[in-house]
Image (cartoon, rainbow, N blue to C red; front, side, top):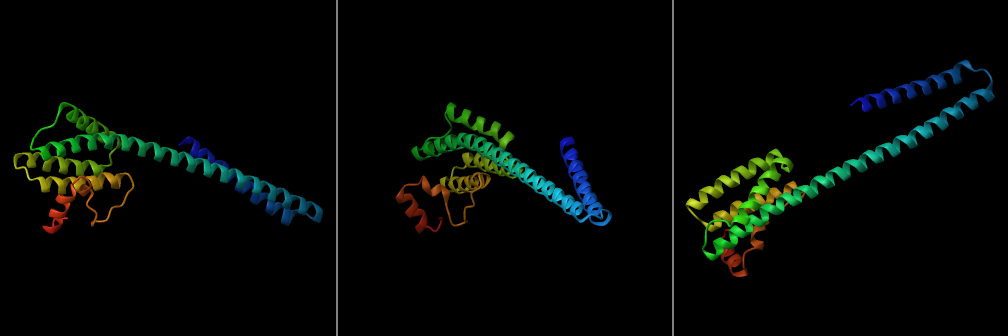
Amino acid sequence: MKKDIFSKFWMLFLFLLLVGFLIWGIFYVDNLQSKISILGIVAIIVAAFTSVLTVSINNKKAREREYELHILKEKQKVFEHFYNSYFEMLFKIKKGQSGLSRKAEEEMLLFKKGLMNWGSDRLIKKYIDFDSKLVNSQENPETFSLLKDGDKFLKELRKELGYNDSKNVNIMSIILTAEAREELKQAGEI
């Protein structure tokens, strides 16, 4: 904050100094050769100032891009924990089993921990909604509603990573077999 105020003060000072030189050179110096020299000095200072400012802005943007890339990588690591746990749960449901293994529960716990640090407010709310529906579906298991809710949450995860999925794309259909996809298409579900 102090550095930002100092740089703004410094830029204002330089701007006023250059304007002062221009006014002095144009209106108060009588010798034509001196006027040309003053205008040349001001032009050189403006060119140097512009190049320094351009480099400074480019460095700031590069740091911002590097920071955004770091955040994206951290989010990818966190989301991987969710994928591991969720796909194991779907695999167990497909086999007719229920519950999660200890490893899948640990993965989900790691996801929740990471979500606290790296998830946006919107994504945290969507996860809480999804988790509530998931708990309710364990009491009354309906595989398709689980897939549908999972698809919505996976789209939210992808949105957090910068992807924009259309409403026509069903992410969960990737894990379905060709027969199951065809059956759901005929039923008008996907």
